Amino acid sequence: MADTKNSPKIAKKVTKAIEKEMIASAKQPEVPQHVVMKTETTLEIDKCAYEVVVNYREGFDAEKLNERYNEVLAKYDYIVADWGFEQLRLKGFYKATNKRANKDQLINTLQDYLYEYCNFGCAYFVLERQGKPIIKNENRRSNRQRGQQRRRRQKPGFTERKVTDNKQKVTKERPQKAVTENQKSVNKRHFKIRPLEHNKK
Picture 1 (cartoon, helix red, strand yellow):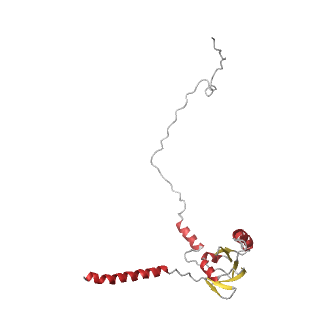
Picture 2: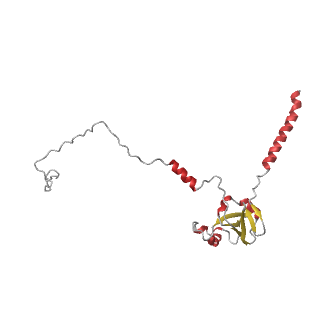
């Protein structure tokens, strides 16, 4: 009889635990706040100032930019965002004076990018970074540290050692070839051309 009294209490506890799990799993993970608007045309992305340079067809949307932003874009001087099929796509570009960048990554090739990769007449916007980029170097080592580590790993150079061997070297003499009387004919083949014989019937 004691088991039947406790079973409704256990069932209630189990259902409450299941409901809590369902509510916790239903909550979507919060998107971290990267974008902070300062004015209508200036904003801050991960504590780096940007300015909206071009806003074609009112394409700028701070909320979608916050959702789609990735830390990889922090190294670029310009961020171009275009709309296609209700999705915001981001691409980074460098200043035209950057000599290390590929030519297709320079901002002066923006029109080519828009014609080739974006939907015709799509809304887009361009953000220009103000100041130097802030790049997180948590897991990166500096070039100096890498060089020091390489030097430690290198093996010492070759050192010459003299090896003494107490065993005497044994040399085998090759037998000399037999000398023939006719030296000229030794290497030549001798054959004789015979006239063709006809079959006699």
